Length: 277
Image (cartoon, rainbow, N blue to C red):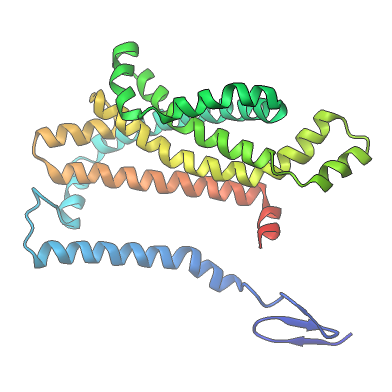
């Protein structure tokens, strides 16, 4: 057997293979270095704009002003971030559990899907910003309205993504399961649900970003705890750098949660990247 190496591929007995494609060093730089460089460039442009145009911190604080707010109120910001994180994760967890169960039921029965899917679409079409004040009236000023709003805003993406995955199983895989004498539940769990997992994770990654938004919207309508309350209260106090510090923490929180889910997807579904690639 003869083997020939090239930068793009490896030739084994005349047949090209993808042995040289996707070098680990280059891939690591693309996934870590490029996003970091983009963030640094955006912060630099932001800082330069505030200096060149002489924008006062009251209107748009520069990055050093935001860092100063972090250093002045580290404990306060960290405590309120934990409140927002707890509301986000609890609401997201309930939405995922309920969405997966309902999606499996809808995908299993065409009759149930036709009867209930329009109701779910109508529920999702209601603006969540309009529902937030009503949740405060119904559930009070505690954690409950925040968790419920996160649940409402995350539920539909999970349901749609899961149903899309469950209904897109190739016919040949279903025929293979039947040829192996698999029961209906075995075929559903080991073939359809497994095939749907990449699509399910797409819905989860969309939902986790929306979950943070839902928690903040609820906190703004009930400004007692959480980073949303920090933004509202700092606005009353005309402390724009503190508001931007809370917004920065929200952005970091969303990014971290998103990439944690992406990492979990890579860990649980290593085969999915091979299929899509």
